[in-house]
Length: 341
Image (tube, rainbow, N blue to C red):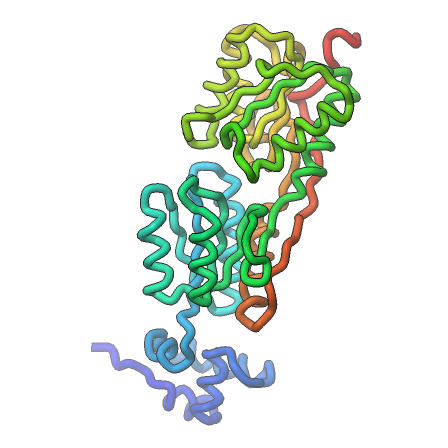
């Protein structure tokens, strides 16, 4: 039977006090870097494992964070999760990945019961209302929402892509290519209060006096996932209306890939007949033909920044609202409209 190494034995082997070992592993107080590394080296050599439960009882910290999403199949969320996890580990935290749809209320209860210290809400399940977020914040949980919401900004940080800039860049690109009749595939649903992307699209259309018909937009009314299957279905819906659109803006890359497949299945060419633009710049946007023109959202960086904001709140800071820069990535799925050749 393997003998469990104690904190006292680590202290003795490292030539330091047990209090110093505690400060090193609890990441509290001041310990110079050379001494810290010495304690870590001795601990590794002795295979010392701190008692996380005992430590949490003493410090009132569980060193646990959670990342909650509605659908993990979209690669954008896995890239955010990598940044979130990497930064969390640097600060001694572990990350719980929560795919919350029907289980949302159970997760919320679990967050409180297990004393989760911070949560990144990476997508907005339809049942996750602002009042539920406020309830979590009132329990002392630090929260970062990957959206813009009407909640108490002192208690909740909001972190998102600069959708206004991203959509405007994408639309300007299409207009400069001669496109005027531009469709939109909306993955969120009609009338969603926080759908900044679609609101910006409509505003651009109106500001530039571009033609717009209600038949130019297809909405995910059924609550299907925002994936390539939904993009395929909604693009089929647009094509069935036999409109004269020459380009389509999509809520995200996953749906744009599905839309592109739907177009080409009908013998229509991308981009010669219809140009396609996505949003997010997921890894698959380069692994298709033609490669997808899209708006890049710094996903890994968003995960890292979310941890920084959670720690800021835990150290007494107020919530903040930040936008991460958006950048248009031009690839092969867009070209000049046929009528400008």
